[in-house]
Length: 355
Image 1: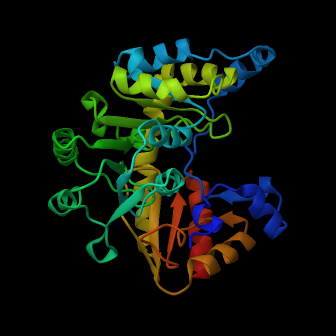
Image 2: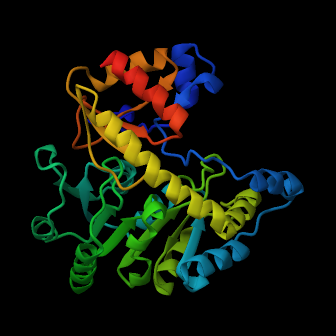
């Protein structure tokens, strides 16, 4: 039986504060994968200047933000749907197409499974195995595609951090099209590897999920979007709740897509800091980090349990993601975000003293 705890995510810093008795402001949150560069100063100023917008209903069609996204991705605005974070689009997609038999690659983000189970559909799982370093094998995956009406892939994968090569993804796209299978591709973390996006391959069977939360560091504003062909987007729009995207989120999203300097700086920073953190983690006895292409790292713990390590680090004011409730992983896996050098050094010091 699946319990509510099975669906819990990282980033619940308020609960961690209640548990530990430490003020939220004194906790270093490595459990949520948010860009460590934070909000651009100019965005803070822009939000303050537009506070009066909360006196009015937001644009239900998000026209200005759609235009910005279309320019950013070089797509037609009619191929874009915007929502209050990317997660609602998972539920909207499954509801809109009444999916019945889904295939999910695991370990992965748990909301696909949760949304499908709420719909009452059947689920088949394709398990990436630790003994194979969670390597994806296209030929084996293709065999699992028989008899399903939908596929759910996360690329880069959360929580593993790995990425499926573009040419292999295109093979899946082509096969899905021939078999009339919907492919739901979650690219919430693709911004650090934009060249790997399948945004140019959208068609009648491919829907791509994107997020502002991670790369642009606005999880509290809630802003995400999806891209697909016009007919697919129209079908989603028919059942979308009106006014779901607030005015400040729409303003912030448009501004962030125009901030090329922030985008470039974030990618350069993350490449350097991820390399540093991974190599330092690998030097700690009792830890096995897995290579990542994005802003977090999955770690195997050889001595302690994930829950025990989480409790011990929280005493030191550090919150990590216990991955034991993620299908395909157990109580020996944690995930940590890549933060700035000062914060990463604090994490490394705490791990060396604890594991």
